[in-house]
Figure 1 (cartoon, rainbow, N blue to C red):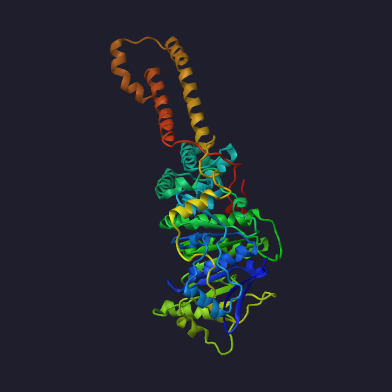
Figure 2 (cartoon, rainbow, N blue to C red):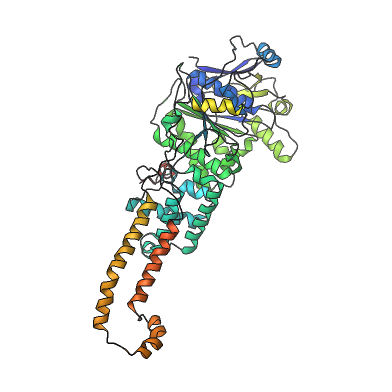
Amino acid sequence: MQNDIFIGAGEAEAHLLGRMANRHGLIAGATGTGKTVTLQTLAEGFSRMGTPVFLADIKGDLAGLSQTGEDKPRIRERVQKIGLSDFQLAASPVVFWDVYGELGHPLRTTISDMGPLLLARLLNLNDTQAGVLNIAFRVADEQGLLLLDIKDLRALMQHVAEHARELTTTYGNVSAASVGAIQRALLTLEDAGGTYLFGEPAITLDDLLQTDAQGHGVINVLAAEKLFHSPQIYATLLLWLLAELFEQFPEAGDLEQPKLVFFFDEAHLLFDDAPKVLIDTVEKVVRLIRSKGVGIYFITQNPLDVPLAILGQLGNRVQHALRAFTPRDQEAVRVAADTFRPKPGLNTAEAITQLGVGEALVSCLDSKGTPNPVERVLVAPPRSRIGAISPEERTQIIRNSNVYGVFEKAVDRESAYEILKQRTEDALNAAQADAPTSTARTRQQTPSRAPEEAQSGGLLDGLFGGGSSNQGRRTRESVGEAFVKSTMRAVGSRLGQEIMRGVMGAIIGKGRR
């Protein structure tokens, strides 16, 4: 197995060393300058190295990784120009994933795994509403309520609202307005596809860490053409995967190659309007996860899309052309140029605006972890197909996958929704069983009144707590029935795991339980 990736060549060759690949990286450039092809070349290189890859396919053209490339004149010309002697067209092992289950195996997680911090981000909650959501998770932990899908969380929030008075005494104010805002946000999330995202069987890291019979790392491609229209779900899902990697992988130290490489396309979606606590958490993940053998590569149009604290952690850089039409564009060019180690005779800022399609400025870390001087190179072409694949080709890849049939059918089991519904039904049955005894006891203890008095006094009796016991029983039934009808609007339940507060809570020191 090779231990480096040939990126391209100009006056000198540019290589990404396997043992430095977990120091993270950035691929940046304007639309149409070749970022996607560069990503495809790097993904293939990691696969040949034996490292599994996870990436999102927003436009559908990265699916071509699964097919052998086409022998075209421009490909042969590029190979000859950069002196790539061992170039052979070949497909890479690919597994397709899709939150909606249409273009790949269904990709799911659970509400408990996502945790309150990321859910608050996903639901766009303010600080007060996020606090109420944290209280709800604490209640679920203490009462052993599995939170697997959206209907579980909706039932839990209704349970919290019903017991708001006693919870306020213990945890702080639980307002009906905050609970209502969370419920409305859950409805919006459902409409955006949250029903598909949450449930079981849930994906595990082992499902992503696969190699084929030749020892090549499997490239996990998330079909994101539809998901990208819900940017909040897209960004939160990928951030959750990063957090899972951070928490579950043990410390590994310096490895000859990463355990997994994670490409985050359209990285600006992760940081747009993100609260400071979330950005701080991402910075912590990026800084520490490399010691666990994971490399993170951000792909974005503008380097300014990535916070400077995180940008400083990205040791391997591929910069495609930028256009300096506006003051912000000019600032982006300056920032991009300043992040490279200069090379004598090369004006980096000027070169960034002059690069052609398929050209890039590249600087990777050497064996000692020091950035190499920037090189202007022609990027090596991918060995797999450039572009989309047919539905028939995709279907064949899906059916030949070793996880085919594992995730295709959702599984239900008892969780918060069923437990809370059963509690309500038990309370309702107990109230109904007790009602005849209470009625008989009341008739024995209360003197009979004249028919006229009973008819004329009914309204006042109701206002002051009197009235017939049958009226009281109907009131109790209506409250219970209302809850049952509300919770039964959702359908089914999910196979769950042990209650967890969410990995993001663990990262910022709050624990998962």
